[in-house]
Length: 411
Image (cartoon, rainbow, N blue to C red; front, side):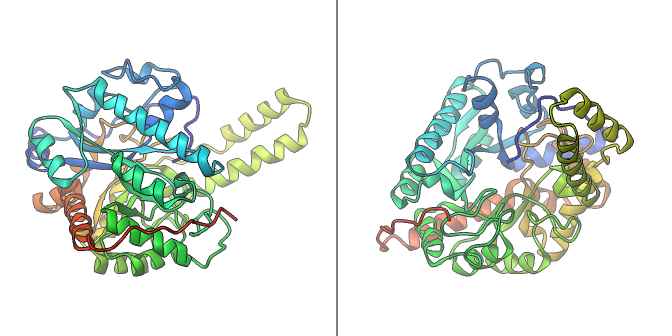
């Protein structure tokens, strides 16, 4: 995830869909749940609202800072299933990481319990289908970094028993057993202990999530995993070469594995121009802090002047659709989904500024000629298939004993 800034400017509305397109979207999403792979609401509630879950029926945009998620907007966005991310910073390790992850899981459980007419906990693909059929939003848990298990396979198993159904192998920092996409490599990808983590996740039936990991780690996990893997919130490197994105070679390997990439909405992972602007902005802020040491007013004025002269590039729904199209062309329509990263990002594409915006993306793909069958796969059909694959792998591994390895600490 990315820590949200204090204010999130509302993006302009996308071009409205025609009544016929809206009716078609409703028909597809009544039959197949729209399942988003990654939402960081829990982290925002922990950081800014003392882990309180009240007041989220509607109007969360009025909070300070505003949120991208509430029940009313989930309903407007036709969401049928949501993986709620439980996230702690990659700088936290050991027993503290385990405790703080448990606190985040507790927050998600309290969130679900607070809105029983709208949310219901799910741990299997069949749960998602049943809950969606009952008119509620299936709610699942994803752990957003391998550091969160505190170097303990026992903690991994207990998180699974508490409902976690995926774990991202790394976050922004390399762990003691896997390289991150945004840190210096230490292991050449996945270490032997990392292979053991992947195999233990396979044995449990927990999805292996490769968002945030280096390309070498992606390839190592694809080679090690007996079950389909996911990228819970990543985009296509061919369109934006950010290291968090997925290259075409990995996409082709992913197709052979049976997994999927759930496309991220963060503009830095969607638009190369935005990514480079973001890097220039960070460099300018560092420069002005050096030039105006002891003069915060002068520093802030200089940074504001730079931003006025260098406006942030606009990113659109169409560009997000470009990533979906690209992944579908390279890996196939069976291997793409949606993982918006909402409430974990400080900016959004035009028209996708909150969880109510998913129909705008479907309308764009309909305009491009996507079939109902392929839209249903994108919405949630692919994720349901991948979960069932992980569940089948776990059943096939019932005779395999639990891994007892003590994992090495972060380098």
